[in-house]
Image (cartoon, rainbow, N blue to C red; front, top):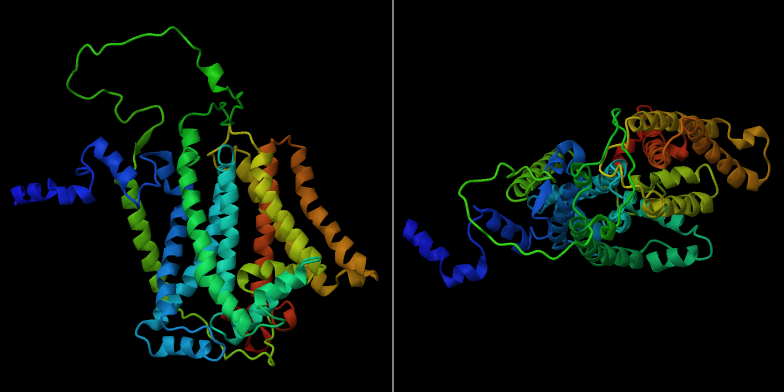
Length: 506
């Protein structure tokens, strides 16, 4: 048997497929990562610190797993789906009732889509709080923001395809938000819908975007994103593994950046000769200055286990909870309440409190611009790869998050019960622009004033601003999704009028 295996593995046919031997040496383990189509985006070696579950939480890998799950389940659903207003709803019903495992297939596709949106957002949050957006990774941070927007676009375009009441009115609300864009809003809405209302043209365009254009863009940009992680020096944990000087209190010491020409001085040319070879290993093996290990097989095994765990958990959840499907879409029967998809509920909640241009365009536009510009504003690399930058960082993040939740909840309830109208304001300019902007300045300004007295670093200021943005988005989403009932009024989630269940809109 050993001779047979040796004959096969030494044949020209075998070597045409596998260009290296078994991964039992360091050279072959390196070749596994550089010559394999699935592994070549990984570095040959990775930092031991980056393998800790509490550093990355596997969120980047989970995002890829969700994307691949969506691709497989989506391709299977396409075999039974026709993008027609007359057949789409019937196809989904047949898929759930007549196709073997069709209900499970649709459930996994639905929950994987929601899961990918949530995981990509959490991945961005993790990257920020570990300072992994700083040079030389600023471009890749921007690529990640583009991927987040594409993920939202992919989920949004797929929302319409069941063609039921839930999807019809959710897309109607979502495209109305896009229509508030100054100057070009109506043109954007017309381009998305292919007309003035949600109909056959809209279904065709959303279907094409969902199955072809957006996934193709995501696949290419995702490959670029993963490749840049490797080319930019691996995960930011490597920066801390290479050693950043700290004080006795654990604060990172800011050191002056030295150019390569200044770090290495040119000396006289020398020649060397190999005098002898000795047997055995040096005591420095596996103890290099960067404290790295070979990616294969450790990274491959961890990613395989994470993939199996994620798919099993997704399949279990899909078995216990079905994807929602309401009645056939009816343009003449408006649902109450008519809500956007949950990942756009923050925007819809803002629309209840301020002018549509401010809520739908200016505020989210300012947030996206801030995120894109962030790595070019905060360029200090001394705390890159470290959670919350310093020992004071976690306390400030927790304080800011708690303050933002309380302040946002108060403002939402105040506007619901009394609002600026109750203060006697009559001008629409004050009601919809000046008032909300004033409350926004207070929301941002108070924690910044408190922390400014403690002489924060620039990175710590960014921690506070980012935490306010993320916590505000989460609070607005929860308020709109769980607490808004019929008429878009506030109700306890357990006591909604007419038996409305907010979870049914998932």
